[in-house]
Length: 452
Image (cartoon, rainbow, N blue to C red):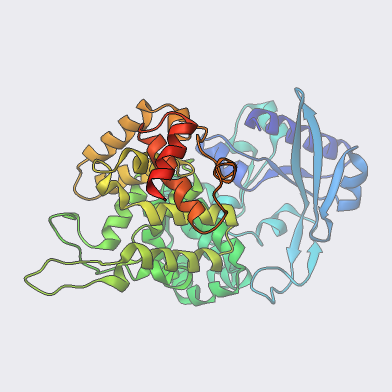
């Protein structure tokens, strides 16, 4: 969705609501982003019109959250369908579950609506009609909570009383960290104090929502800062205690001059750009999660982590299951954890083993994890360069060729299906990948020789 198209659609909605006699403004994050001069992903509209009015004013609407005052309005802008969230001014009743208000009352003023929102930088509204007429952004603002000042000061500040804001919706604690990391802002002292005190309550938030917030932190380009803040506020021990345990786990300095496993992991997170695939980001976070449980040091022998990959896969699987990742994402993240040490043998692999290694789904993610793993430790990229060069040299049809010998061929040749079939087929495929056989007949001859 183009931001310009989203803005055009939202402006049309504001104009139509004004024409019908209602107040209407841009609200929330889009106003913040406009003030920061960055592209807003979505434009939300806040209005005094009740949901039933919004539903009748526009030809294509969806009442996805009408009981909360939210209606989706669809519009066509330059051939693209744009969906805009339109929310009625409201004030919330008590939050009994730490996430949703038990009661929603429609409000009569924009100010009342703003005062129930989360942070000052997200609590401003903008009159786009006035802005267009005056060509002045700041004079078109409705700022009842000092959002402009906190933007200038680089502060994440809860609107009103911080404890109340976080008690109402515990997810706001993770959002405070994410916004502070994204914009490289500080968390205002009273807001941070409330966050630290209430951090144990994050368990009331659904695991899916926690997962989504953590994924945003990992993929917005400021993952290291986000996880430092999670750690400093006590949230990390609540949502990912396995990662908190990386602290103080020493590593052999000849391989890891950077420091302990926590420092090493932060250095990987620091290298994740905005827009990085979520699976790669989680793979970077979890790749050494098995080290605390496998640490051993018996001087003068060096520090060792025997079996840390296997243990790490088990721990990572528990984390991913707890956070309810999809099977597809879970498989890829676990594959990254399971295979990240195999690059140490890449120059010594048989051709068949190397080609099978290259067949791993989304092998580019494995390559990138190895690259940032090296850059975050000893800095030697020679194995990464070897693997990258060999993968680029090999055509896909050589990495995953049409098999010369199949199970049907073995049956036709008189072999009875059974446990050895898999072994026979693997032997024929290895020979094919290594160039030792080039025809079906040669493959069957190899099997006949080895499995008489």
